[in-house]
Length: 159
Length: 159
Length: 159
Length: 159
Ligand SMILES: [Zn+2]
Ligand SMILES: [Zn+2]
Ligand SMILES: [Zn+2]
Ligand SMILES: [Zn+2]
Image (tube, rainbow over the protein chains, first blue to last red):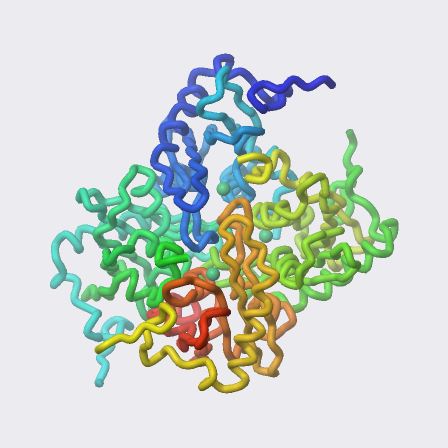
């Protein structure tokens, strides 16, 4: 298949134009982009924002918080998730991630995929949208937590 | 020195009676105890609550969120911290941790000590209070992030 | 498509009979099964073994090492990987994971997928074999690190 | 007390001259310094080496292995530890860490302190030596895992 590149993103079936997305998704992406401004990333200088909408419609946002001991760093997606979870919200409707890489989209790292997958069980996958904050026309990678973590490991699947 | 045990806690200089603490600290401990109710801990069944007060007086709370892949779990203290940090609050005035162990106090694990120490730099140590939710009379271990992580490693100290 | 279940594993295209695999893969799976005996897993009682073959033919093995603070736990796959890496071996030819779940295969968690993907760059994907130690006839899930972490995030892809 | 600085290290009671240490400790420090050469640290460019001696006299070495997703990084101390543990060695006699910071010593991060403390239970503390590879005369910080993680949290202390 012929691939068209728009702003460094392959224009595949799962990459869509921002304006074609549901307004609730556009709102989530906007929230993630705004949360990105609070990133604490003195080591990588790579700011990431995330937003999660829970089943009651609330949006919880997060940014990456790095640490001098790299292993203790926490990503934007997990920050947003623990905010929701600590408020008792365990049903995630959608997740958005925003960061600026020249090539490709910034998707959740494996740690975050693992963390989020705990709440994507019983057939409740979580749609995930990865976007860049500045490149226009804005393109969005539309995927999901379980698509990003196929054959996922789970104790709940039967230890 | 002769040690007196009260509710399984050594009655040392740094273990004090709850009612003798500043009311702002009592409020912080209460917030941590309440946040503990939202803990997601199906693997350990060990619920922990935490609360952090930032320099503007706001209290941010957290609980532990476990994961089937243990390494992806996030503790109560870090949950509270990333909530504050993602709202742009980086000055932590005090931290409280509440959990129920029969013996001893539940102090932050090394991961959390490392995470919090990043924001205890430049001589700004963070007082830390560890309490049990139910044992009465309530006793509180009064310590600090830097006391719990002596000789801490930091890139900021000169790489 | 009609799915046949053998020992709790879906008999799909990527699930193969152990005896049909290359002998070098069978040797790797055997090494992983043996390493599993050293697992330190007092919290989950879920032992996992792993083995990685590097480009010079050497096999490095690992098991899971848990910690009272769950977040500090290290999985079998990462144990095997750091052993190889700390000996200067960065080219991974294949990886095997062995654990006993009734249903399904135990695949690497997201943290391990992320860790391994760092060394699966530049088109060098790492074949990954997940097997159960005891169920006979032995079936093996044949996949790869990049298949398990699609659309992976990487600074090296262009920050 | 008057503090003398030698090569950026405070000359305190627990900082000693390398040549005054037991030869078995000198050997451990040398092993850590050598292991440091295999560090994979493209993100921080900060190489660390570690070595652990187990009760049978064997030395296991490690270096830091970083990851594009910082949280998935593994330090030198944990690398050395999982090597020993996966070989069935759970009794650690001593640990050495070597890195080059201008000021101060590079001590284990909180994650590693937590990881190591799991094997420092029942009164078996683990002596820990932090040294710089090049500054001469070589000075060594002599401490221990439990000194670096006071009031440590443990399920094993009574959940
Ligand atoms: Zn992440
Ligand atoms: Zn913790
Ligand atoms: Zn893993
Ligand atoms: Zn460390």
